[in-house]
Image (cartoon, rainbow, N blue to C red; front, top):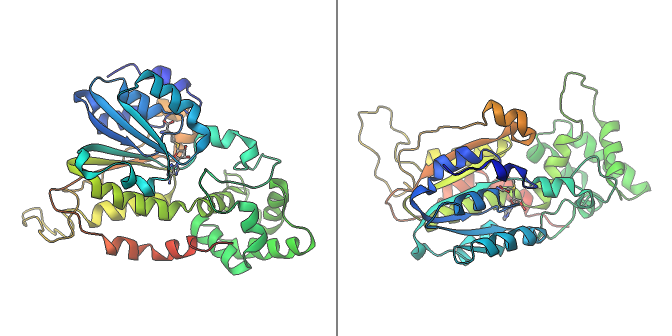
Length: 337
Ligand SMILES: C[S@@+](CC[C@H](N)C(=O)[O-])C[C@H]1O[C@@H](n2cnc3c(N)ncnc32)[C@H](O)[C@@H]1O
């Protein structure tokens, strides 16, 4: 393996880079799609192997500077598009024979540390929370949606048990003064939540997670992105996903497990199932987590989980059942201001 230690010094420390490379296996070259370029940690590591090609996407226009640097270094082997990964098939066709498609979900450190973007509860700015290519800001959502919808967002997307109380208090407060800044929002959350001294995370974590997911329609993006990736991947190609919270992991696990050839096999002596729904080969349900060294060096990796699935030789059929299973999240994310 190439020396990847210098990539840890990029403005975003690439989570589980070694494990991602072990899974993707760029040693023998091939075509890789990096759906979440960020600061380019994964893309640059893959490109450091000869005979590799990377097509990268990111919805955030602010990362152009990093993508340009990669382009300069690997001119003929790298291309970048400022796009959401739900539009992956506009840039990558099935004819290209893609070996591996990678999703490293959520936010980059570049985005969190830019306080103007309003992702952090330490920011004094407006709650924006858009990663790029968004319709609404969090501020618009907080000041316009009704209490029931806001409560559902907090509860379903942030697993915030006290979501409805927080949303009712948001409505009460905003009648007097619109919510303009992050401290305005944090104050309402602090007032609404029961004290829990055992909890290690910040009291605002779940509401912030929910708002960010909603603003960026992250659940719909993940479901659509996984489906399109499966459609364009070649036989034996891999989908690699790094998730950061239980809802993301639940979605990825459901998709890989339920559309795999070994689904419903009650015994390993039974033949593999042969219906039309098979998209993946014999999914192992293996979860890789960061090692101790990374956990010590890279705090944001603490909740990361890596899963991968291998494309079967079956023709692509649209996985309706997958979308249906998570339809309530998709319907919720469709609501606009
Ligand atoms: C965790 S960072 C990726 C870091 C990257 N692996 C690296 O090594 O630097 C996630 C990135 O994905 C981007 N992103 C999130 N959702 C996206 C989507 N639906 N489409 C395209 N990019 C997305 C974010 O803007 C962010 O830059």
